[in-house]
Image (cartoon, rainbow, N blue to C red):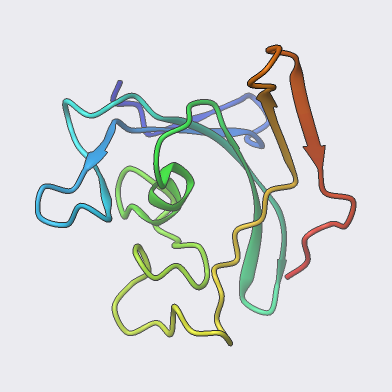
Length: 130
């Protein structure tokens, strides 16, 4: 799995695909590397405001830091770290402080009930704003 961006006919929906594994020298971070576990994310730009872009990510796999790495990676991702990301932001950006929290928000989460396997769906009622 080595595709980076695959765009549909409209140019609206895009895919990020890069294998992800734990960084060998920093166990808290992930890296895109051959031999890593497949990771695939669908994304689309929703809006732009005050120099920031609101992006809708749909992770099709569930890797640790998948969305954060796919957003930040300079060649296999968007080259646009999620605002406030202390692990994947560019050097010199103010991150990991109360006034600059990680701006990553789940609009919907679906997972199986551990007791019966039925899907549990949690939906955020308020939209995320920049």
